Length: 170
Image 1 (cartoon, rainbow, N blue to C red):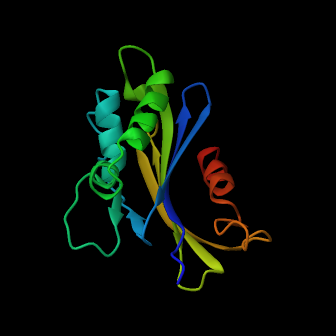
Image 2 (image 1 turned 30 degrees about the horizontal axis):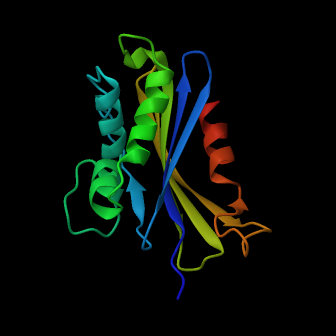
């Protein structure tokens, strides 16, 4: 039996229109959902708080636990490796001014990239936070298996990164 290939993805658009992308591959067929929360990035005053709020933007779809920061919980408890979370912090820190201001960023997309029971289909469950305009939009996008699917289970059309980029640049 093969496990599903799932991940959570974050794309951030900086004030200078630079696109930052981070992904976290999930083990054991863990499926997530992106959580729409209009106040998710309110009162964020540090890189650490920003990363914490990003973690609160995801939840495990079928979990019994009430986890408030999915990324922290996953890195600490599931894979016992804090490096992926630290990598997200470093990326944000490198692209923000000192002192940190949330206004250094225009938009944030949180995307749950999930392989369905039928591995020919992937679902992108996304939430786009427009930090400049204070709006939040969300949706789901179905992607079909790509031509290299048998060598790369994550190959799909459209590719999640391309799809996220199309949303963030609108």
